[in-house]
Amino acid sequence: ITRSSMPNHQDSLAFASAVIDLNPSEHRGGLFVQTGAHASGRSYVGFEEGDMLLHQHDIQHGVQVQSGVRVSLVLWFADSTAACSSALAPWLLHASGWEEEGAETSVKKEAEDRGRRSGQRAEQGASRGRERAREARGERARGRPEPFSAESKAMSQYA
Image 1: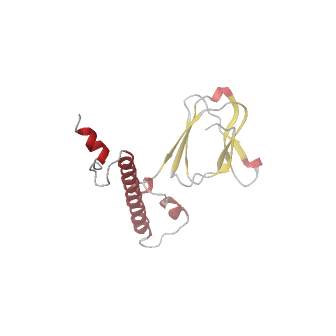
Image 2: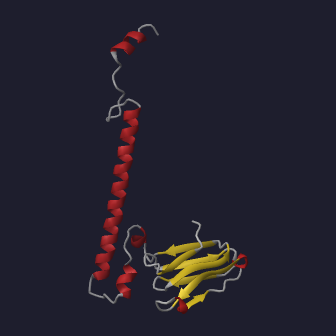
Image 3: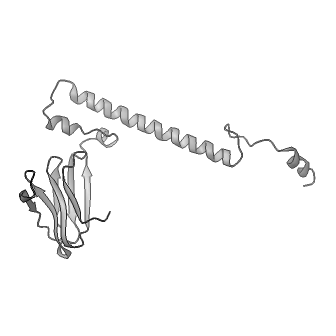
């Protein structure tokens, strides 16, 4: 993705994010951390070659390149396999103070269910794709070739 700015935001769908500025000497500006709603609360991160910034989901940050071209590598991390296979972010429940008994178990179960349903939808899509390919090749859904037409039967007598 090429862009010179990204507004102030939080990476709420990642438990933690790692940012590596791959060419810190070739641009001015870049990644900032912002306290408060106004841009006057921005502090630019002074990367040097080989530096990495690791931050949690609740850090307000953004990008504003003032000159040059910035190239970065960004990695997002989840805190569990269940969170990776679903669109859930259980860390947000903890951050919100929702510590109701059983809430974490229920979130993990929902994440597992979403992951399972996602896998089922992927298999259904693959099955439909295989069926379309068979149809394109003139095969029946059961995988057997279509019977020869009368014309092809007649031609096969001369082969």
